Image 1 (spheres, helix red, strand yellow):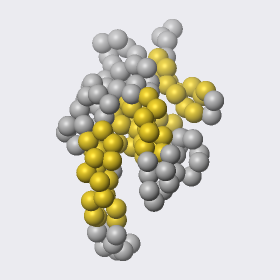
Image 2 (cartoon, helix red, strand yellow; image 1 turned 135 degrees about the horizontal axis):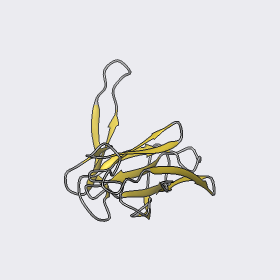
Image 3 (cartoon, one colour; image 1 turned 30 degrees about the vertical axis):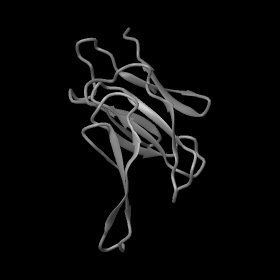
Length: 136
């Protein structure tokens, strides 16, 4: 998956060998950002059904979530939420999953220092979501 400047995400398939990759374009726009630009994809099996789901960061700091209703070989991504976090993480959001936790990188390093907020993971219905962490 490769995000593009506009709203499209391209899907390439590696038809090469383990020693010499050969990437072939399968679909130049397998999904499009529901709003915004600068799509940054992350694939992760959030629902533990054996196929990879898609998270897209955008220039405005939103994360869109697409569930894969297809398979590993023939994905069919369906938009579940165009604002998965319910808040903007910061300009040019880059979603990444590390040890099952969603980490959001941004142009400013991932912490909005003007509002002094951080994102902290909480568990709901087997899916990790994020909420603002209150300062004490």
